[in-house]
Image (cartoon, rainbow, N blue to C red):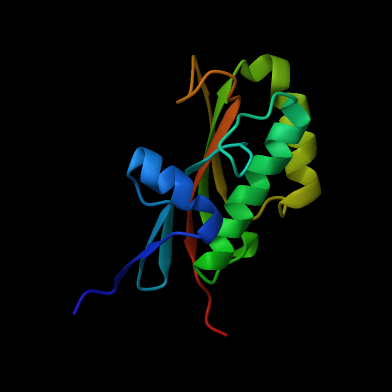
Amino acid sequence: MSDREIIVPESMRPIVERAGYAPAVKVGTTVYCAGQVGRTPQLDVIEDPEAQFVACWENLRELLAAAGCTFDDIVDMTTYHVQMSRHMAVFREVKNRVFPRGHCAWTVIGVSELAHPGLLVEIKCVAVQRGG
């Protein structure tokens, strides 16, 4: 019997149908989250950088919740940034508002582009569900 579970929150079904990937895969107590971006539920890219970053974190929060986790369960995170020097201060400010500081390993990578024009950040992480 496999302990592999595909995690698809209801609000993410359209992206799964369109792109054909699993938003997260849970194996035992470990959750592997695909990169999350700042889009509306209708899959529109949010143009305002701060609003896009907030939506990105909220999408990640929703995905983790569907897997029985919270931000506190993240052990490793990688963020991919377009125009990193231009937007990092705002990204960091949003991150500091919503995400526990100094809580997990974090790698920051600057990239030339993401999957769709206008996306400025993608957050990928691994979480380990703690026993309750």
